[in-house]
Image (cartoon, rainbow, N blue to C red):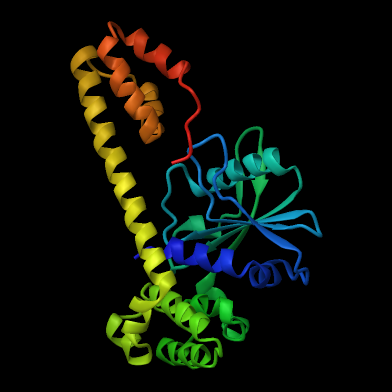
Length: 285
């Protein structure tokens, strides 16, 4: 199940509620910005512009601290691209959904010899559930907050979902609750409180599921293309230099297709290097 897509849907559908939660901002003059940041390939989870304050709220949701490149560098990368594109104040919040003992979830900055970049980190399992239970937009996240009795918390979330008056919103929030609750609870317990058919009939559930499948298909296509190209290059030129191989691994599917056509005319390793140097910027995937 695509937990990231569920969180992205919530942030983009309820940007005012997320801004009030994370920035204590009362403004309703808010715009959701595109999450594709040039140059590609890079895609943020949620980018919200508070127009009145001329400020951007950038949210990243993570189920795992494992990331390539590392999360701290990714946050720096996102920041510089957002800053270049919009040139305003940027507040970044990295939200971890599942408990872990990894030191990464306690890190709040990227540091190297010449640069230090800071960002906020929220570990949902340490958050008090009270404010989440009081806001329908945050109810799905409430299932992952701090509690001494997880089943009792899930029952409270279910009761709050039932109180949502508008039927479509109630069904969509219920679907999101069930998706994120799957990170913590057994399916049998979830179905005690929520009707599974409501989730499956929900328009947003179908949309989230479809996006997840599409992303999986794209990742699969890219991996297959990458493995084939690396095999062909190795057969033609022997071992590929690690830095060159790493650069190839960062190419988009479109760029890999261009490389697949071009390598038929390569006569030396330098042809490959020159191709990568002169490669046009990657289009959005």
